Image (cartoon, rainbow over all chains, first blue to last red; front, side, top):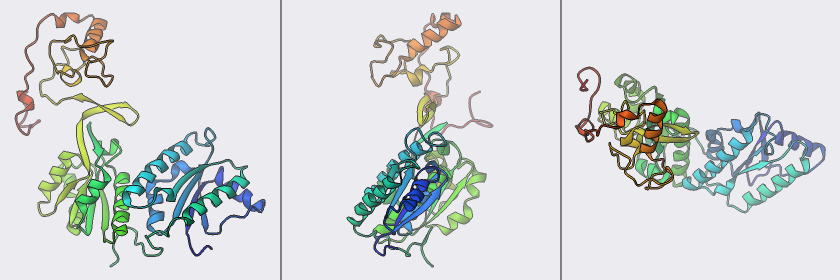
Length: 145
Length: 221
């Protein structure tokens, strides 16, 4: 596990998650600081889940869904893309760099591309200082004590 | 439906500065349908406000509670235990809800998280349009179901004014001329005769008589 940065990747089971699996089978190396979280569809990722990841100390979060027109549920990926765009604005308002959140689209066959995406995103996050919302310090929903 | 819009996050964050424990009160009525004041939006806003506070070295505790409607005392009363734990209430209900909360809980600051805009309906996904000025003197029976007071930029009762071009109002924004809509509708219904008589000027007294009441003990009819 990368001790410097903590990155959460919300990956759709139908594309990006399978692509990550394929990347493994293809021996494509990617940063171990990335924690892949599988979801049935990126459209199911609520804003609170992404904000929660940052609140609990993630340095970066990316959402990886299907290519345009290939969502198993028709338009979940498009909804996710809109939601991510809205959340990037919200991050800026909150005081976090909006670049800490990104949406990628790929297919299940793109194992190499998954490695590239991770490299690109990890590089971006490493260029930023660690999140000021220190890991482990978060108390979801309130003040300690 | 009462149409509401989210206030800017910066303004909301400034409003709650200094409070350590804030209740974010959602409403499952109109404001939830508008996508700004339901429990989901309240949760997201609470999350963002906590992040905002922590990044500034401040301490903020949030609690999210929703009620069926903030414009009814019995539902507002359900918030009592949560209000007791809070230093301030940030309500995502409309202006009515915010005032009902403020009246019911006089000891706690009630802060509005949304702007209340108008009475309208869904024109397209995510787009609401005003349809009623709440004038208290409905003339839709004369105008083919199209309200000239709301939809005519001049609010005139005996139109059209002559300023429309290509079916659009001269004020712009691609607003259809309400009086053209009225004429077309009445023509289709074969009822253009209702426009032969010059109507009286609008009676706005029902709209300007302070806080209006309706139902038992209120209303003119």
